[in-house]
Length: 255
Image (spheres, one colour):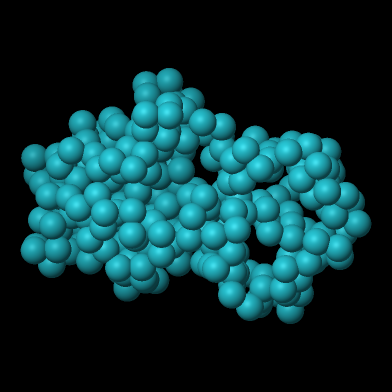
């Protein structure tokens, strides 16, 4: 397979592209090693909020894909920056306890927050939790969504509902629109490009999600490659209107 002319760096999705649950996609470790040997800079992009960036890097290393924490780009990076730069540092954090480490400097406040930050709480998304967030939004807090994924592929656990459903419910109930900082938002890709120090046309976005990775990456001006692993399906492809530059069986097929 020929390399795309002009591509000098990559943004690689994690869940469904490098990992299937906690297990590596066959050939993923070798693909990452080939990129390192060839001198291609890359960053690993993820919308996951179930665990902090450090834990994402540790999970990859445990699966035979050694990476450093700074090579992982997650929505929490942008969310923290957005909150602190706003001058309104108080936030209700609907993220797992372990993920709060990525919000250093943010003042956690469940009484009168300036922001309601929604990530993936999994089974902790109770009626009481969601209703409290609704009340905070009604009182004037802004809704900051780490992402709006509808579902994610959790390996042997199958397809699980994701935070996007709860974000949409809060938007509807409170009559507001969330500010989204994860993929496919343009700020997420702009941050990733700045990390690489490359222009959009020099970067290939590789992922399993037609909307988040392909449509989002293309809208930011990047080249895109979709892999037929993780959550990829013909239905999702058609729904998103994605037109990737490459369609691969898996990340192992990266030349």
